[in-house]
Amino acid sequence: MRLAESLIEELEREAKSTVRMLERVPTDRFDWKPHEKSMSVGQLAWHVATLPLNGVLGLKSKVKEVGGVGPRPSPQGGQDLVATLNDSVAQLKAALQATPDETLIKERFSFVRNGQPVVSFPMIGLIRTVVLNHSVHHRGQLSVYLRLMNIPVPAMYGTSADESVFD
Image (cartoon, rainbow, N blue to C red):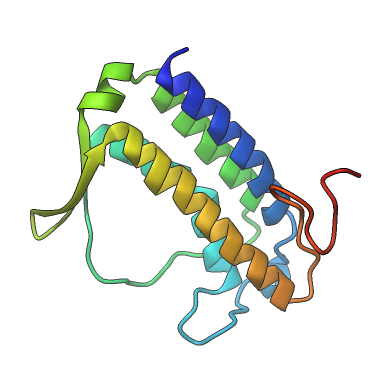
């Protein structure tokens, strides 16, 4: 099995859980935030829905300039979070299918600040860390937002207080 196939399998599995989370984000409350320093639920959900695009861009550019935290984008109007996630995942799957194992192992991706590397890792690390692990992290954050908004939290890896994976 190629590395890309293994990554795609994990991406698809995690995307199914992410869909269940994004389906519950209330579009009429996109501006809600738990704290003044926090992202709004709309910004966070949009970030989660578009995270796979970081993998697409990273595989192409191999570098990303980082800086301070600026304004975060939010869904516009009636943009569908689930459709956006599905499109982002499809784009990453296509990029991974076109990427040889050797590239995933030997070529590197770097975050740079003012042209100087901040962190660098193999391309497979880009997918594992910047896409998959990062998505799981923010999906967990989104589950807390939903709980604070009194919206039932879906089961992810096991039973939540609101539903069981065994039902």
